[in-house]
Length: 188
Image 1: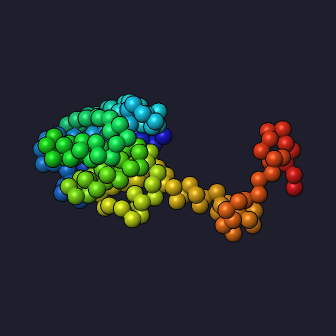
Image 2: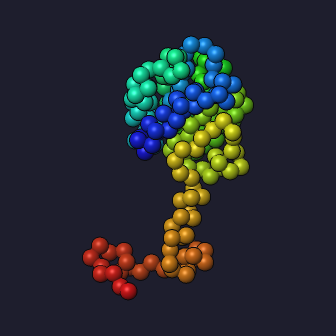
Image 3: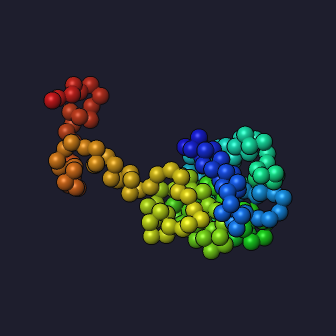
């Protein structure tokens, strides 16, 4: 997950090199990127300080600059509270000159931050949140949902199954106790 965050963060940096990014990124000599994630709660292990460190490493890989602009990193803990995440995003975008936010590891917080980023025409790279609404109902042209979503998680196993009960959409696929034990011998 943290490797995916690092690659995603590099993608945010790469966006600054595109012509269309001129409208989104500031005209100053600094590109400010914030990592807004859960640093103290349930999702701290899949985001948290590791995501901040991954961002630092990605900035170092870019030599600390992109298109001649220095890259600055901010970070904050949203405490898994959508209102706090949105408030931090508003502060960063509105007052602190942040050009893009990465992280948003909780679906409810990601949806709140996505709304702020969209309204302010700023970039949001979502990594860790899984709500399919992020790329569905609440999809925004300024956001990238980098990892997985609940729709894919629900449909992929069924699509790969050869069991007719699963592929028909049965709510209770057949799982036998034999299949759940590690000492079981596969039966044809």
